[in-house]
Length: 104
Image (cartoon, rainbow, N blue to C red; front, side, top):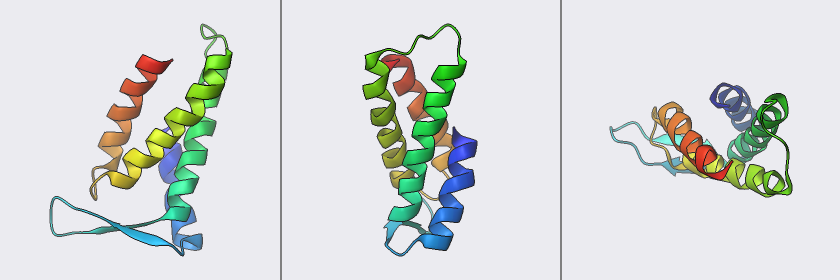
């Protein structure tokens, strides 16, 4: 999911990002992100999670998954948006994995 999210979020934000916001940094490098790029992160996260569920033979799709996939995708978008510059790859590995393990 992290690779797909990065592959979509940054180009969408660069090309179509008109509504930007700043993300605090642990160093002096402030990150600028866009709502458009963050929206792409949420959409790609939902697609990646749904594909992962569909391609895992031991997991049966249930009505719970119809609720948990968008919630988890939204959490991924918030985590990515709030992560300091350079830390989003780490936080996007740990937080969604932990949440998915508890929700799914």
